Image (tube, rainbow, N blue to C red; front, side, top):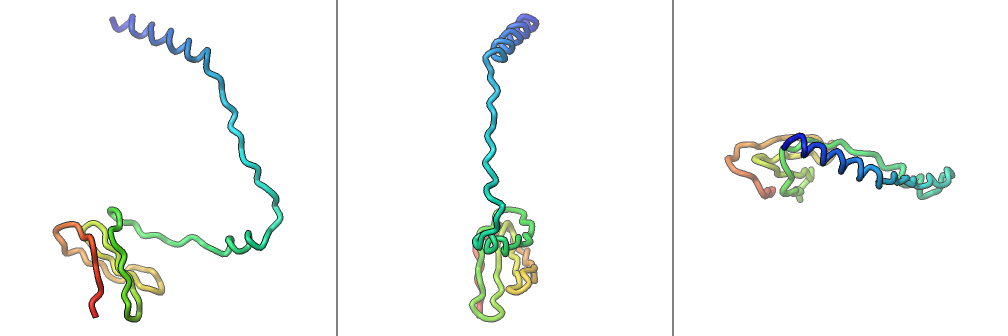
Length: 106
């Protein structure tokens, strides 16, 4: 049974291969290399550093009082980021269940 099945599959593969036609992929033109004002504007933006999260971020909350830090909740922890350096200032992970929301108190 197994040998008969493989020969049927080989026949099918050759039939399919005979009717297959390779499709040429068209590449978009790069356009003009001249630098436009819009090109200079968008080139000013740089990529930012990202921090790894163990799961999806559920909530981002901003502190209304100075220094305007922000907190991001994901999984069983809350990470407080500094407003200026965007580095993690503090991590609170004393929760037994998933944290869905956070807020700053005065």
